[in-house]
Amino acid sequence: MHQTVEFFETLQKNLEGLRELLGNSSDVVFRQLLPSGHTQVAIVYIEGLIDSQRLQQDVIRPILEASSDEKATPSRLKDTVLNVGSLSSVTTYEDTCDGLLSGQALILIDGYAEGVLVSVPGLEERAIAESKAHPIIRGPQDSFTEAIRTNTSLVRHRVKDARVRVHSIQAGGKTKTDLALMYMHGLADQQLVSELIDRLSNLRVDRVLEGEYIEETLNKDNKLTIFLMMYNTDRPDTIAAGVLEGRIALFIDGTPFVLLAPTLFVDFLQSAEDNYQSYLYGSVTRLLRYLCLLICLLAPALYIALTTYHQDLILRYCY
Image 1 (spheres, rainbow, N blue to C red):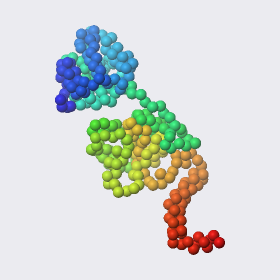
Image 2: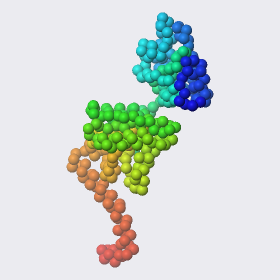
Image 3: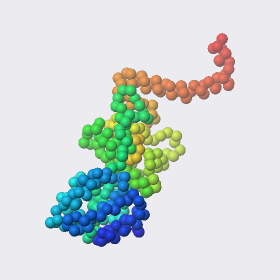
Image 4: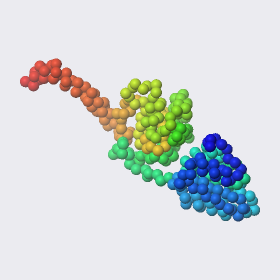
């Protein structure tokens, strides 16, 4: 069956089509209800991706307790029956499959070629914890998680400005990973924002499981460079500071690391703790890092040069 086929008006045909599309998977639940209006209603969801308690309280119970004076219709369910905030209509198998795999439940009514997707996500999420990749002593101790909306909210909590924009995109032909582009309107380079949105919207990859998939694709013009073109971190305060500087943050669902662009080489020699120290102390600390970098780069070469070709210089300073 082709995925762009639209729903039929017969409930059983729609259920058979969904079973065929999803391959009779054991974790896909098909539950049929018969409300007091004697109109058959079916609920389809994937076990483990939805909150069963919320589904029972906010979806199934209101449908069964709905008045029998009015016929059950998709519009009536959305307007007066269901107690869920996020509702959307769906008419094709493709959109239905995307919704089910994203943690939504589908409601089908006999006699209507339209379904209702109800958002009742129940996937277990990791709690916000201390950063392990970039730990600091002074400053915020929270870090991003694998949930994209939790991550964007952590940045919005710090940057309470109406000019902050979030643009959502899906990438990956098979994974359909949610991406979110965050920037400050009027401060970020709008041409760069448009270019990033265009490139992300036209990604030709099967899967996006982590930020490296995005970096490798976006850096196709600089494949031979050894330097990273995007900075990644799991610290919300670092991303918030980057957004306030006019940079663009890229959130990827399923990973706690967020990408920041554009980036400079000196960004990799800075610490989030520098922002919570005095100007003098922070400047001296950064200068020491630069000095240590030069020593690490030049000292081995200088030592080899002296011991191999200029041993007399070593003996002269030793005696």
